[in-house]
Amino acid sequence: MTDTPEETNWRRHGARYRARRRAVDILFEAEARDIDPVAVVEDRVVLSRDPDNSVAPVADYTRQIINGAAEQLDTIDETIERYLAETWELNRLPAVDRAILRVGVWEILFNPEVDGPVAVVEGVELASQYGNDVAAPYIHAVLDDVVQAGAADNPFTEPISDPDSDPQFTPHEPGLDAEPRHASAADPGPGPVRKHDSPDV
Image (tube, rainbow, N blue to C red; front, top):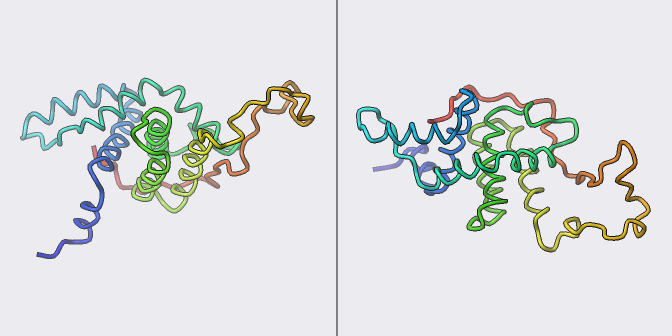
C-alpha cells in the first residue's frame, strides 16, 4: 500500500515535533480565549479519557512545554521583543507566530536537552506549516539570534567592564540603547497574512 503525501509527511516528523505542534495549538487557543494554557492542557487530559470525545492524549513533552512557557512567559516575551526589529512589537504579530516563537524560545533558554539549532529548525518547520512565506524567515531570524546570543564563543555576550575602553559605548546618552540590536534583528516586513486553516487542538 502506497502512502499519501500527507501520511508520508506526518511520519517524517517525530514525537517531539508533534508535541511542539500540539503546544503551539494550545498556546494559540489559550491566548484566543484569554485563559491559562495550563488549564487548556488539563481540560484536554480530561477529555482524552473518554473515547467518544475523539481528543488525543496530551504528550508529556507538550505538558512540559506548556508548563515551562507559562511559568517563564515574561522572560520569553522579553527575549522575543529584544530580537524583533525595532519597528515591530510582539503584540502586533499573528497569534500563531507568537505561539511558535514562545515554544522555540522556551526550548532554547530553558530546556538543556534540546540543542539550540534543533529548536530553530523545528520552529521554522512549524512556521512553514502554519504560515506563509513571510513567517518562516523572521521566526528563523529571531530564534537564531537567541541561540547566538547564548553561545559561549559569542563576544556580544560579554559585558563591557570598562566603558572608557569603548568610546562609542554611551548607555546613559538619551535615545541610545545600552545593548544595541544585532544587524540581523528580525523584521517581519509589511505584516504576514495568516492562512485560514485553524490549528489542531
